[in-house]
Image (cartoon, rainbow over all chains, first blue to last red; front, side):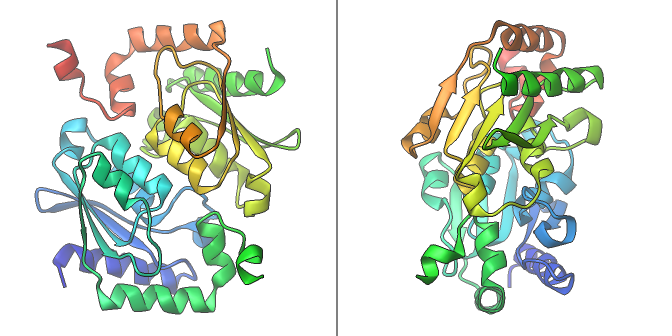
Length: 152
Length: 152
């Protein structure tokens, strides 16, 4: 597996070990990881620290010039919020572990010229499939959906 | 001024008093403020806690049903990241203090059926005009732009 996707997957698995939602991410600039992160909904009660947001937060304050030479790696297709953060900071490239269990706003990213690559890594897919099967309510909360209507 | 916009403006002014970027927000559900917040870039070195994001974070974990009956008040037009968070959580109404100093992704919000109201409050406009004039580099950093090309 790609070295940086492995780092994102390591973050996701660390989150699972903490009882959290297993989605991880790293922000990479010229081959160096500026920050890694993972979904913190359970661990911190956070509604904004999705994996990608946590990676951006942990990378710290960067100039626009740095973001515009960076790549964001994430184990799962980015939701509307994380997509918006990528667009805000002008990150030109996003590498996605998988989009089989959740398809985020990849079309919006591409429409803004972002280079989006989806690896469909079996390990990323299995991790989310197992998590969603085990904790559907937590998963629906994380993507702003109500489990009720889906179950009806 | 609208009571909730006043609360958002109070948050913005508190941020300015801390040396921060003066943008504030409150999330309101059925007439009750669930959480208020302000831009935390300077105070916490945060790249993700814009005013709207901080309000969502401070409102804590809520079900989709709550978000879908809520209104987000913000002193400034929401950027791509904050817009994405509004869409993720399905918040149906956004009340904006002003969009003269920065026009965010209001069109994207409206295209998803969000009710967007812009008050053009003179106090909100003056607060941001004064801040941008005093701290342009900080402002450009916050919206992911490089001050260099603009100055050239």
